[in-house]
Length: 411
Image 1 (cartoon, helix red, strand yellow):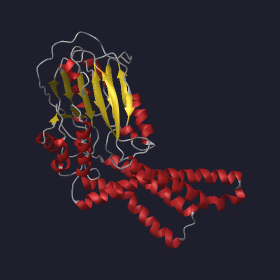
Image 2 (tube, helix red, strand yellow):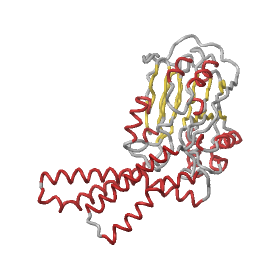
Image 3 (tube, rainbow, N blue to C red):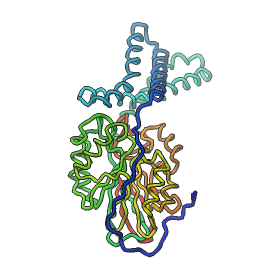
Image 4 (cartoon, rainbow, N blue to C red):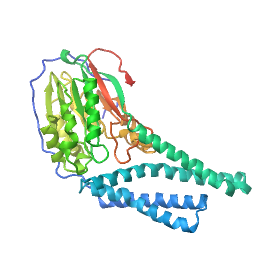
């Protein structure tokens, strides 16, 4: 496997091939919530709420007539997100949606409250050593300050998640057809339409697309979050974005958590091209899309890409939700892979975990051998509707065949 960063090959451009469509069978089965994962997640949530209870009652000296109701409230909150998440896969009514929104917001706040609780105990240990005679007296002040800061960060995270950035980047592709010189593409990943980001969110995105007027739109997965909703109604605003060369979509992992065929049908009926292990030619550039399910089996992914006989003379763009299996795509001759999935980690400390898992391919434009990989942090959120340490974005890509430096700009 070649890990060199040599950029794109340069060779004479051939005549653009005629439009083609290639399909292969994809692996059967959909991802579900395994019981083991639910048990692990719920155990972590129990532990976090237990830590909050111990910290609250120790640092604020909560009396017995208060800590019992407090314990009951925290116990209910500890199971709220798990129950709400499971309900969203079966029911799509207002009550379930409201329950999920509240539970997901609490989950985001909980993250920072747990970190605050840890800091309280660390500060307490410091004061016990440095000024033991005053350690107990300062405990309420420590808790008030640190938990107050956690609430401020949480509110800031909720606000930040609604502030969509416009990121502009220039991508050079060798042998780019003259028709593509200076064309713009809008990359929309990870909308997660569901009970948090609903039809109103889709309307906001559609307005932004019409304002930016891209020539083509790429949606590399997770348009839906996998919950039970009216997919046609939620995504309907996306059908009126007025994009000259069309909108292209491939499935992400979250489509597989729900009615993937229903989601695909809703998008197809609305005029969006769903690329399910397919390739199309758009004015001499080959647009390839693979569903997440295919990429879980590298042998299927390799077989499909190799069947396309991609060559450096004809630029190709691969929509693959997760920035992985890069060696397979690069060896098959893909010029540019567009991915999402990572959310840039979305919320600290998961920003750190994402970086460890995907390295430099967590975010931004990077080279992998002769292939370029562009990963977006996405425009929506999953779980807590907050972002701390990452930003929601749409990516405006300007294509060029000229030997100009790539540049990246946020608006």
